[in-house]
Amino acid sequence: MKILVINSGSSSIKFQLWNMDNHTVLCTGLIERIGLDDGIFNYRPDEGETTRDVLPIPNHTTGIKLLLDRITDKNSGVIPSIEEISAVGHRIVHGGDKITKSELMTPEIIQIVKEASSLAPLHNPPNLAGIEAIEQLLPGIPNVGVFDTAFHSTMPPEAYIYPLDYKYYTEHGIRRFGFHGTSHNYVALQGAKMLGIAPDKFNCVTCHMGNGVSLTAVKNGKSVDTTLGFGTMCGVMMGTRAGDLDPAIILHLQDVLGMSTKEVNNLIYKESGLKGISGLSNDARDVDEAAQKGNERAILALKLFAHGARKYIAALASDLGGRLDAIIFTAGIGENSINLRKMCCQGLEVLGAYLDTEKNTVRGKQAVISTTDSPVKILVVPTNEELMIAMDTERIVKAL
Ligand code: ADP
Image (cartoon, rainbow, N blue to C red; front, side):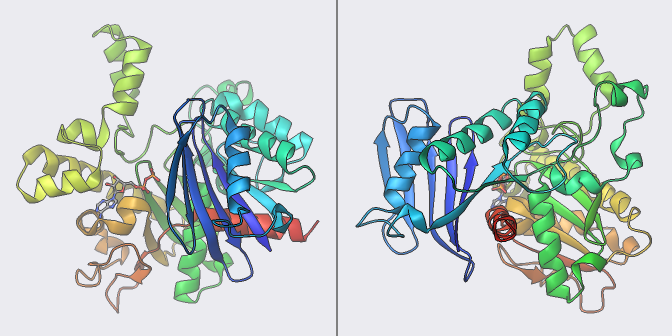
């Protein structure tokens, strides 16, 4: 079965075509600058040249038409006709509190996603534009939505309710949703497989550390708590986002320093985190390099990051009913930063997690990086949200 996976953003579409018979990628691509005259169509077939075409791409439907034409092209295509595509899996950011699993995108589910748009105004509308484009261009083909929030729908109320006046939950729906769920789910499944533990018996803390950062407590294969919340501005600090802040600081910035909501928004989302503390870059590689050369603000930025991560790993471990099988690192930083992984693990011996600094010198591939006799295993698992989307899509389509 061949499944097209689409991640449709406001001005970009990422895509991959998967052959689910052997879990291989037939082609990948990235369409950028949608809406502009100099749109960019990047395309890479599994065998053959990477191409980059600059052309007007006025909207998502034009972008998806281009990709369908290209993947079936006589020369650079990877399938003879679009009939070969059995289904399309879409990444969708927010399912609100009604969507708890991946879903066939029926009119009812599409309506729920539309209603959840106020919670993710930058993401849900373009995600839906991708589905509309497929409905126009490939009528009748099943569209499946895989939601960033769905994996966290198993959290208990004590993890998702904020201690505000209760009516803000019941009347206004203010609660923790959590994000990066597809990645947390995928690496937890892979981690269980690596350690030979049944997924529904596996307890771990998954650390998704990319530009965005979230950590999740996974108990018996299900999310029971996570560091991102109602929005994406809490928990561990990130590339440009501050993560946890005392809300009194926000009030002070506005009331005493006279900053507008827009200015505060810009500060906490775009000018904080690794970038704000280092004063150099939001890219962990740059900060790490400067720290190695002795730059004090870069060293401080890494220390803050690791301190926050350690604190949350230990806190989340306490949600697992007394048994932690593994701590899993994933995404750009988690998969690649030897130094930050080491810093994040310092002190976690208290949980029974002992890092093997030699084994930790690995980048971008699956590995056990704890000592042989460490009671809690520490793992690196490269995330693969696209494969997770393709697998869920296949499962749902096969059951139709
Ligand atoms: P996104 O959240 O945008 O998908 P990624 O998962 O690609 O992001 O992660 C991006 C982050 O990963 C950046 O901070 C980048 O610096 C970091 N990263 C990538 N490679 C390395 C590396 N070799 N060492 C340290 N950090 C790295």
